[in-house]
Image 1: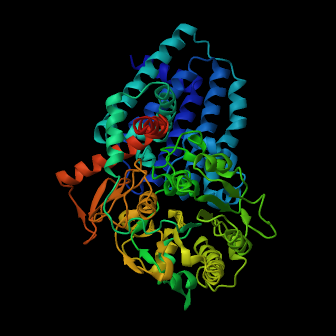
Image 2: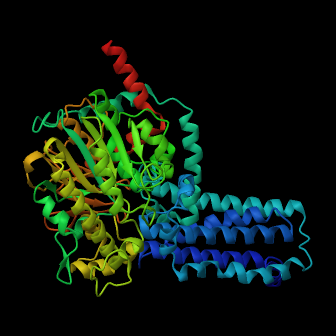
Length: 628
């Protein structure tokens, strides 16, 4: 008996050594990657899920003869390794994993290539070293005498290993689905999924979801669910009458500032203010100091999308790429109904982020882009803020009134080196780092904003305009958080602190004659911009997911990954923990908090349904027929 077992082991080692090498290498690399995602603690169950995924891959290879099997396993090793490097690079900036829908945005990679290159680390390429080193080994084994196992035996081996892999992986997936209902279908927290069922398992779920979504798109949504969604939207319609219609007849200017985060406001480095002009101007504004960005994979374009539509960004990919042909209930369209001239100003190419199509969908008459403006100075990805903002100021004076102008700056874009080179701002102690380059870049943009603000005042534009300003998204990748914490003197360096303090962006509203200036502490986010404007400008905008910040009494911030806060409790989905905002202590969730969590997750699901099923087209059509 023992001799038979020994013979079988020797036979397996001799004829299937490629399988064992593949299993060892890919398992080891994947576990290292998962540990990077999870920190020091890795759930023991993830090992079983990862092995199950590898068993499925290996089972398929067993259908081939020796040469074909070796080729297949080598290809799988390369694919898994390449995806790990892509995931790591993506994770450093977005704190998320790459997905199939992100491939839709590959056209933008050329534009942000410098940013991608800056996120790569030399250590990342260690994941690919075995792919190169295995080439001579692969050639050696391919030239050996082939395994003579007949097809019947290969099919039996395939079936056994495949079924084992599927069953074990199903157990892990089902356990996760029961633990967090809706997580796998929404992919709202991709890194958590990978930490539970492995990186290969996550990408398998992603592929399944893409296929399932395409199938669902072709199917009708139940009428009962449509009514629930419309009811939720209409419940956000009106929160109060403060500031109602205060903007009627006035111009609206929204200034979206690239990578502007709150931690630079009123902060000094080496005795110098980082943003002196913004610091001065916000004293003339209503300033929201607990305002959060809520973007996902679309980054800047997601900020634009939420500001103009008050719908959540796409669960995967960018809404601007995926839903450009949808019917939307956008801010631009509503202001056009009030005879406003609507325009966008941005110093990049028209086609970047599909803007040339999306702006038409969102109701903008004209898009002043890099092709139309004077591109006499390029900084980073487009026209420098130094020349872009004065050109915008000149154009504003010529527009038909009243107007809505959406202005998007660009120079302070990651990795910040181009703008940093334009200023001698002293960042001693941070020179040459991402943090140091960011401080210089945002200081450069602040200088240009100072000139822009002065121009708006001198030309009298602010006398009959309401100006909103905010930062679009984060500036510092979490991989650089240690330097950021050094800059601000942060002691509580945990995931909760990272979310609560360092996902904030400034938001301010300037009213004519500097009225209503002061600080508002309401917890709010980019989703709330449109409903707030709708109240001020007397717009009928029933289909929004956000809240009017000027009339809300309770905070309302939901992040695309399922984290949320109401101003009292902060839930961090990446670690599945709840915190009391006043004490910053971890707490056990009450029944009410868990119900609120379910409501927030339902909001994300409903927003996805609205976009995937183009429901606003149907809702608006029904409303129009009822009003006739």
